[in-house]
Length: 284
Image 1: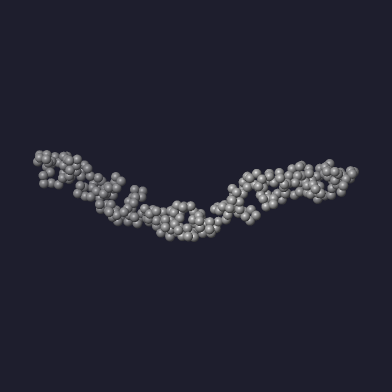
Image 2: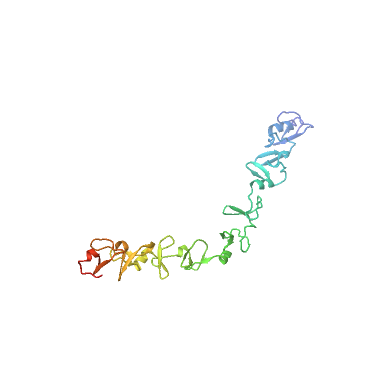
């Protein structure tokens, strides 16, 4: 470069014996360079001059003296930091403001450390352990009780009931029938095999039946309406000799008056009130 060429690219002032900055192989005096190319500090809004250190983070720039924690104002130069809502925070301030607390030890879970989440709470990985064997659960299957979280082997050993039908562990829910535990999906009608957990049912010889199957297989038939007599939900019925009636069906065969709690007469398969049966050849 000749002496004539060694001038500021912008103002053309001679740079001989002066401080200058090269930009794209072109020389600029310090004042022109700062005015044209300098970045502006995010904190103080002043240009970061060519003689100053320019600290950059995600396209934003700071003077070295301005690169501080937005909360405690301590310098972040060559120190770990994190961003929160475009604010830069030192690790300690970020932890206090943004990090969650461990549900077990109540200490802060530091940024960058692994944490476990379960039912809206957080644990250090080393604090998220089985209540019985105290081994870390990690991402393995677990079962939760009021007393704590358990790995599956410990839960089965300590608490689990076994289904009376399939003999496998009942991990949640289930029903009890004749003091025996059942999976809901295993508690089936002994006749048609449909699930009974959401159905009304009855039993015969310790076997559960849905009402349809029980009525079809075992229920007595009303001598009047011929429909099944179940006796469920406190329903009352009348028995006489080898015949049964719904209480609402136990009526005089002639005048239809109710005979429940009343004297009555019979003729063949018919029943009559005393008034209607008085002139008939009846049995008492």
